[in-house]
Amino acid sequence: MTMNRAVRASALAALLLLGAGLAQAGPRLFVNHKADLSYYQRIAVVPFANLTNDTNAGERVTRAFMTELVIAERFQIVEPGEFHTVLERMGGLPDAQGHADPKKLAEAATEAQATGLIRGAVTEYSTQRNGNDEVPVITFDVEMLDVATLQTVWRITVSERGRGRLPLFGGANHKSFGMVTQDACREAVKALRKEAF
Image 1: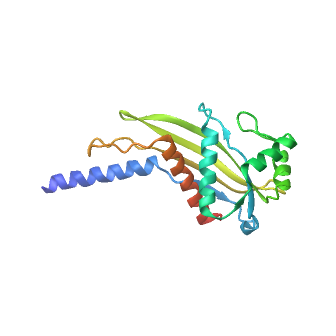
Image 2: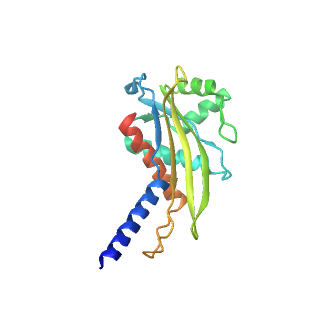
Image 3: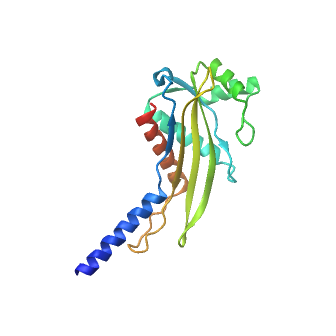
């Protein structure tokens, strides 16, 4: 390989890495450092609000996020069916978009003996053009509230995007919505484990 070709190959590799870094920005995380994070042992999870055109986006991201919480083995999670029953009895079930009265959520979480309440919103769940490909893009916010005060304990925003083909090297590296959702939730919980768990 001549020196000129080596320089061009290095520059191309650097551009590809830079592009990947720009497309995959890390999660944005806020942690309330006044909160005693060890206090939150039992938590309730509210189905995430869905602010997208995909009617199943909220449910899919909620389930994937809960799976990652279970894998983290940090919290005892109120069984979703049990929490749903309590919310229904109190008239606190979220509406079709996932919006709910925070006071009713806190009352239901108190009855379920939870000290933390997790809720979220999916703001993007769509495909975007990436050259000749279409790739899935997912963005969501999640926060944990103190049940007694409804103050934010932590809040995180995550955006994940699938990758299309790299024509230079051939082959495909496509990710489905399911894979991108799982990756986004894994990234969120990984960041939370470092700073908030």
